[in-house]
Length: 92
Image (cartoon, rainbow, N blue to C red; front, side, top):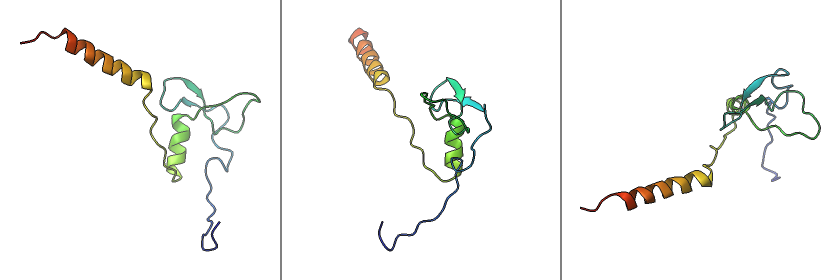
């Protein structure tokens, strides 16, 4: 750390106990519902994805959350559909 840099304490949802135990929310960028990642417990050997509620809490405390990238499969599907449409359209 540079000598001129200053460190400012910042309390986030992760510093407190987070959301109430059992709080459910939709997985960020998806449709699956799961327990929010910032609730006080995590079962050993499991993983939680961030939910819409977790992302909203982080944004409220000043974090910038990047949008989820589009899966490559969806882009290829779009390209293939456009190519198929172009091949099928009659020439004038």
